[in-house]
Amino acid sequence: MGVLSSSAMTDIILNAMWQTLYMVFWSTLISVVLGFIPAIVLTLTAPDGLHPQKVIYETLSFIVNVFRSFPFIILLVLIIPFTRMIVGKSIGTTAMIVPLTVSAIPYVARVFETSLRETDPGVIEAARAFGATDLQILMRVYVKESVPRLLNGIILLVISLIGYSAMAGTVGGGGIGNIAIQYGYMQYRTDYLVVSSVLLIIFVQLVQMLGNHLYKRLS
Image (cartoon, rainbow, N blue to C red; front, top):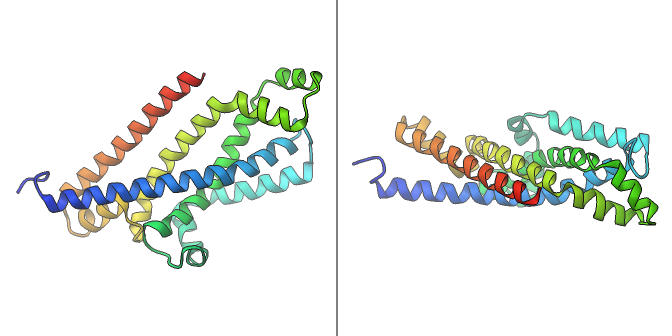
């Protein structure tokens, strides 16, 4: 029976694709929402921010750097108790959303901070001259001017999470990575390894193409 003619293999692969999309979608959404908060704080309290606060900025920056330093596979194991507390279990597709999100939040915070702080100082000063409030400057200048860069950061985040979701398959996280380990590696099925690798490459390429298109439109 050919590699792609097996209905059983097709069902397994399709289910794994859905699991990967499920993990990546929710971890991206949650991490972007939660990561935006420290990004705003870092931007406002930075030396060139609207309200410079050295202690707050350096403390939060240090925390972000610490969490970004953890390799995902180590972080995944370290926060097993937290994962159990949130979803009631530490394995499975839903459970993997927790470590994926935790690993992504500091990445989002740093990338968004960098994007926001690249806003032209001249535009900020012009807004101040027109009497704009801090909130108006934040939303209508910082955020509005940074939309293309923020989008680019989200695209890079999605690509990273696709890779992390595959890694999560090594500990029962489901998805395409789990198929590669369970069937490709443990059962010596080269066809599963090849298909899994090709699907991950396709996912990444599609996301990058979509991101490039949207970035050009917004820019």
